[in-house]
Structures are given as C-alpha cells and as structure tokens.
Image 1 (cartoon, rainbow, N blue to C red):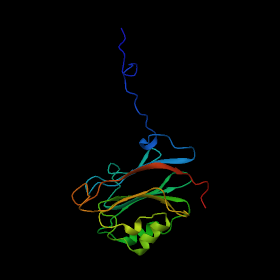
Image 2 (image 1 turned 90 degrees about the vertical axis):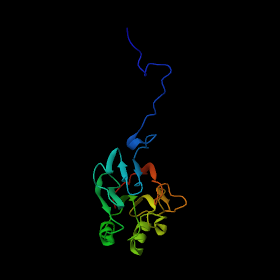
Image 3 (image 1 turned 135 degrees about the horizontal axis):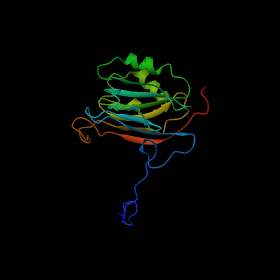
Image 4 (image 1 turned 90 degrees about the horizontal axis):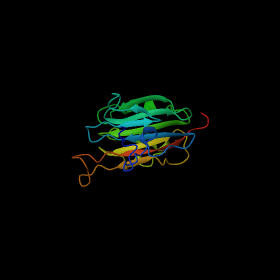
Length: 192
C-alpha cells in the first residue's frame, strides 16, 4: 500500500516557488536579484542579499548601528567590500574614505540600523545623492532607510525607501518600522 503524500493530494495547496533571495519571480537575464531589510529599532540587524548570497546580516556578524553598506561590482555582481559605519558615535570621515573613491558602475547597497544620520554632513549627503538617492537630503535621527545606487547613474534610483522617525507613526517605541525592498538590478555591460 502506498500513502499519498501532500504532493500527490488533490487538495494540497500549491507551494509558492521562491527564487533568488526569496523573490516571488525570477529576474530577467542580465539582472541581479536582491532583497534587503533595514534594521528594526536597535534590536534586529539589517540584511542585504544579492543573487542568493547573504552579503550582510547579524548571522554573518558584519552589521552594526548606523549605515550598513555593501559595494558590488556592477558587471560581475561580486561583492567588493561590506562595512558598517556608526552614524551616532563613529567618525563620518571613515564613511567618506569608503565611498569617495568608488569606480564607475559600482553598485552601492545601503541598509540603516538604529540611527543612519546623526553624523551625516553635507558632503556625505551629496555623495549619496550623486549615487542616485532622492531621500538622503531628508534623512534624520533614527529614520529607516534602504537604498541601492551606483556610481555614475544619470537619474535618481528607483530602489529607495525611507520612513521618518515620528512618535505618532513609529511602529516600535522610538523607532519607525523596518523597511524591506527587493528587485532586479540590470548588470552593467562593462566597467568604465
């Protein structure tokens, strides 16, 4: 006697297939699949996944308070470097030294955790704006922010979300909700 497993049952719910980084559908050819989540309050760290590889997470122990940034080669999709920058008590010059020398076509993945903006200065905001951010100019204490930009972009990035820290709308006491963003980024054809 054979028992019918759930896959053979007529009443089994079809399981939703998940694609790279848990996306609900595959990305087109020559696109990179990504999913990222900002930190939740000062408790749950952010995550950045690209092409089914976790680039940054609490489990990898490479995230921290402030801005969590992964630099990725826009042609190959390979991780160049990932670092966290403390924007509450850290030195903004460390962040500037990290993002000033980017090469054309470098993808920049940013996920906030706790406080992304206290130490930001005008130069930092301009550099992120040049990478395609439209919200960095309004970023403030304990806001939630996720962003994907690139060195040499002509327009503002479609991959950005921002939630203001507001005691009237915060999901957590003192912090807004975590943000989750996913999508498909076109590969650069050549590194300039």
